[in-house]
Length: 403
Image 1 (cartoon, rainbow, N blue to C red):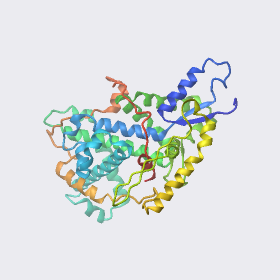
Image 2: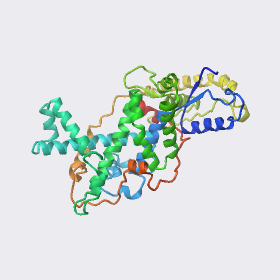
Image 3: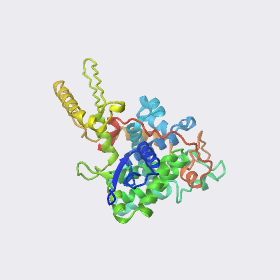
Image 4: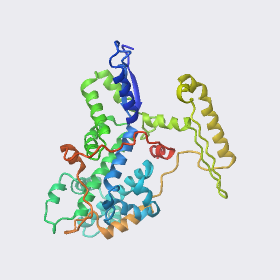
C-alpha cells in the first residue's frame, strides 16, 4: 500500500467517520496502520443537496420572508398552491430543486420582457422572438441583463440599500439577490451534469461564503480542505486522479454525469429493498423493507456478500409485480415536463407585481441579506445549524439527476 492510495467517496457524515478513524489511528507506528493511503473525495451530489437546503433557509424558512407579493413562496403559490405547506416546512430535494429551476427561468423570462419592452418601445417578448433577432443582439441583451438585473456589478446591492427610503425598492433588491443565488445553483448543476471539474471548482468560493453565513460550517470547511489539498498539497498524479474521479458517467451520454456518491445512493436503494405500488380502483400498498447484512456484531463483509443475492431476488419480484399488474412507467427515462402553463401563470403574476422593475418607495417585510458578503467578512457568524448529514435519500431525489 506504500505506492498506492484508495479513493474513498462519501457524504459529509461519511467524511466525519473516516476522519474519526484517521485520528484514532494517528499514533500507530506504520503508515498502513495509520490508514494514510485513504484519500477522501467529497460527494458532489450531497453538495448539491446542501446548496438547495441553503437556498431554502435563505428565501423560505424565515417567517417574514413569505409575506411580500414578490417572495419566493408567493411565487410558488401561483403554480403549486396545494404544496405551499410542504415547501414551507420540509420540501425535500427534488421538490425544492424544481422550485428553484422553474421560478428562476420564469424570473429571467420576465427580465427579458422588461428589457425588450424598454428597448423596443413596448414590443412584447413574443413579437421580439418572432422578429428573429440576430445572435449578436441576443448576446448583447443577455450581457446587459447579467450586469444590471443580478446582484453585483451595476446592480450594487449596498449602493441601492444606501438610498433614501423614498427612492429604495426593497422588494426589487431581494429579487436581485434571488437572481444571483439561483444562477449560482443552476451553474453548479450544469457543471456537475457535464462533468466540468474546473467550472465546479470556480463555484466553490461563493458557496463557501454562503454556507458560512447560513450555518453550514462543516460543509464550508470540507470544501476549503478539498481545494487546499488538491491545489497545494497533492502531487500532480494524485491531483489528476482526485479531480477526474469526483464524477462518473454511467450511461456515457452528454450531460449525464453524476457524482460518485449518487451512484452509491442509487445502489443503496436496492440494498434497503423498498417497494410501493398502487392499483387504480383500490389502494393496494405493499411495503417490503429488509436491510441485508445482519445487525450488530453480525454485520460483516462476509455476511453482506452472502445476503447480496437477496437484492437481485427482490428486484426480480418487483419487476414481475409491475408487469403482472400492468403498471405503467417501468422506466425512469420520462419525457421532459410541459411547463408552458406554469410559465404563463408566473408571467401574468410578474406583469402585475413587477419583480424586475424598480418602484420607488416599495417596502418589504423581510430583507434578504447578502450572504456572500456576510460569509466573506465573518460578520456575526451564524450558529452551527444541523447539516442533515445522515438525511435519507429516496428515489425521487435521485431521479432529479436523470431529468
